[in-house]
Amino acid sequence: MFEILKNEFAGFAGLQICNKKTGESITVFPGFGGMLHQITLQKHGTLRHLLDSCADAAEMRHNKKARGAKLFPFANRVRDGRYSFAGKIRQLPLNWPQEGHAIHGFIRDKSLDIVAETIFDEYAEIILSHAFDGQYEGYPFPFFLEISYRLTSKPEVIISTKVTNTGSDEMPCTDGWHCYFKSGATVDVLEMQLPPAISIGTDGRGIPNGTKTTDSGWRRFKLIGNTFIDNGFRILENTGKVTTKLFDRKNDMMINIWQETGAAKYNYLQLYTQPARKSIAVEPMTSATDAFNNGEGLLVLQPEHAFQAAWGVYIS
Image (cartoon, rainbow, N blue to C red):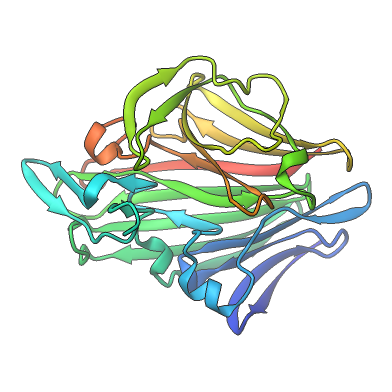
């Protein structure tokens, strides 16, 4: 039923898991930090491309919007790129100069190794890895990263991350993903429902300002319309899976984006509607923005210890 193919886009080598019977697939690019480039699933006999992905070679190289990016070892912003850990002040490169922050980690710039390509009756899986030696300005903490991409016969896409601290000291980190979801129409026509969550207020530079709203306004389906969204949320349920739902009423299609919650799982969520209104970023994260400074959801791994978390997508 499944096959794993070498795939090329804009001159770059990718890998595609494909269901030969249905045409459903996922495409990843190991050379761009394991970028999740496309998810294609079937609804009413029609294949739907669910991700608003990089459009050409230039966007692939620079990817300023972090389309499909793996966000590690810090997801979202670190204020001024500066943080203190274990009594030492660290300074990260400021790769978000318009706000003066470090943002979205540095794994998306790394080339990942292909560990395994496996096909079973019920699913096929690609596993990528990266051994980081601690050589990065402001982040001297070695780790070993593994990412599993799985397409199942359900059909469903499941993405799992495992990170092990390979250094001799405690290691701070946060993790997340940055995929833009679309239905084929403008995001304005989508109705959205979030799991119970607290909305986290931010200042003019995108950093949490201490204000929190218990009712996020999205607990029941509501039309996105022309609403601009650039908000972080803390999920209130902390066991099992929770789901963000995007409903395209015209096409009778629900995009379900679930994330594991609980200890060292994806207990936070970031949403962002891009100016072109083609898609909405739905970003499972282990922490709030600027967790390296405010500590909200910050993971601290002991030497030789690991965390593992998963999220996934299906349509209904």
